[in-house]
Image 1 (cartoon, rainbow, N blue to C red):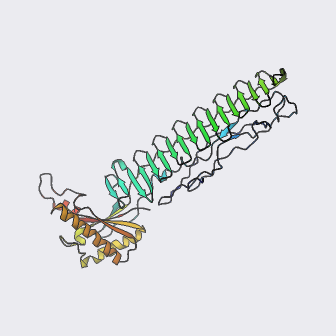
Image 2: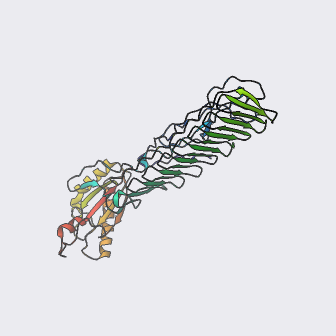
Image 3: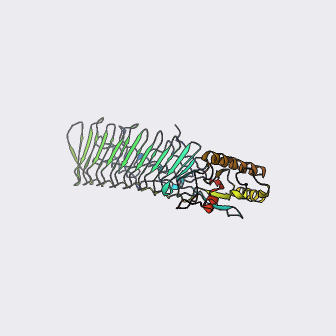
Length: 427
């Protein structure tokens, strides 16, 4: 099964930070009965704009150093001299850039460099207030939190450094404290923020504990490695068991051939095969196993400062009182607005109608919808090719008080509330 490509949002967002463990290959030997065979550690894949790990890029034990002089004795591990024990291998993880990727997926640039024109105010969308923008696909909450949905994917930026991305196949969670999780149908990657973490797929499980210790298990090959972080560890695969005690001593056992090698760490090794009798040979102490590296922490997600651009027009520039017919003398205003939308270069814009609180709710709702639709039609007639839709909010979203604190009329506030807004989301 091919790993799903990481989806692109608009703008195209790079996921470019690769998570790797600082692990180093150590030497080992081959045994025709199943001892570790020399291989090369698999390096993490190079970062890309939309990275996805190869299905062949699985974690693998690493054993690349040259073995000692060999002997044909049945009392020796093939590829090693009598009394020598292959080292417990270290292991490397596959490409984990899926999780420690650029946080740009959570913090798209949602601003446009448009300038105001006479009678038209251009400003960033109000992301510090609750609201629904972008055709109901961008929801703005308190604390710069934003939920954005597009083409089956969604991004929740909570404004406190945390967030969640989901496209139906892949879920990425950043907890804002250095920890997080990546999940898809095959792979789970967890970073705990303290140097520890886990990687799991259909075959491989790797756990790193943050103190130099960790474990590796491969359900397909039956291999397991335990690195205790203090120089000691164990390797098992089929009939082979290798134990390094971290103090120079250790042992090797092959249950099929009956070969046993025990290094006392003081210069001697005891060799036996099928309990035929011990042979004592000279052997150097075992070198300690190098500790594993740590999972890096995840960068906190930056809060979104703007959800896009809002172009605001007072309704009196376009309409007579209580009317939704665009006035003939508003041609210059419509032309200026058309130029702004063309300069924005956005494929989509949303026209919102708003009223003050004079008249009843039903009348204001209908009037706001009619005025928004009238602006859409005027822009299309003026050659705007941006995809436009119209929504009316009536009196439900005032930007100023309709009444003063003593209950008297506030004409200036009502004038600000009677407006048409064009929301241009950034892509």
